[in-house]
Image 1 (spheres, rainbow, N blue to C red):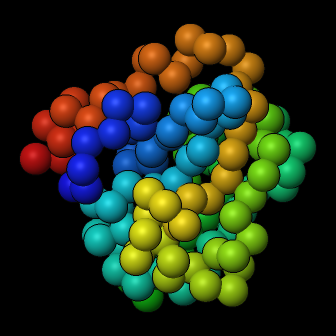
Image 2: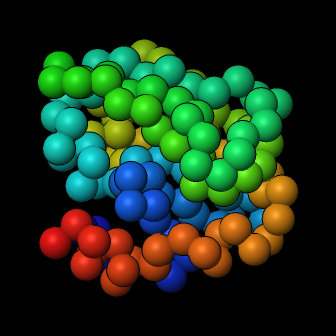
Length: 127
């Protein structure tokens, strides 16, 4: 795993969520998931304005090995998507926590983020 990040949380299904200074939450898939999937060849992102429930399928990533749903870690409304991934989905493989982010949400509630796994709990879950 990459260096510890105190503002990042995880789902057991390998999504990460980062709380931003403006209160929005950036979402992507973990390094563990990107490595397990192999080279990504296609990403289907949610529509801006879409309302997502916590745990709902929000996006799809497809690799040469398999297609996988990406779940929303919290309830909220999509306010941005990383359109770069439409042409270069492999960005997730090379920089999943940086330029490989997938979408951003405005959370419905502040409480959902705190319920996610912290870095240590996620590391234990994938060990």
